[in-house]
Image (tube, rainbow, N blue to C red; front, side):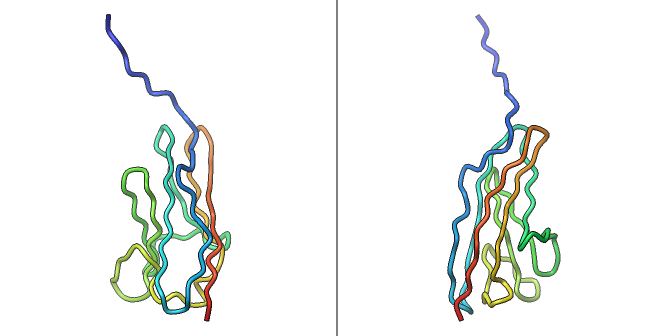
Length: 114
């Protein structure tokens, strides 16, 4: 008898949610989310409901099903953290995963202490 492996489509699921964080001004912070879904969901990031797009300050890392927001504070420095957090970085960050079967998101509030 032959066995067949069948992939069943599934909407995006948040496997690991982001958690609210408090960081002292000038320190570094990292946030990431782990998502699943079939087909693989597209992931978008938001800060205070504004879409974050790739720019001199923002890059994204995708490694398997883990998605990490990379924020840059200066030049070409690429990192998995926001370096030298200041009040401008404080806000609500949201990671949204979408495929043709649905959408799911996780968010956190980043509080900056002066």
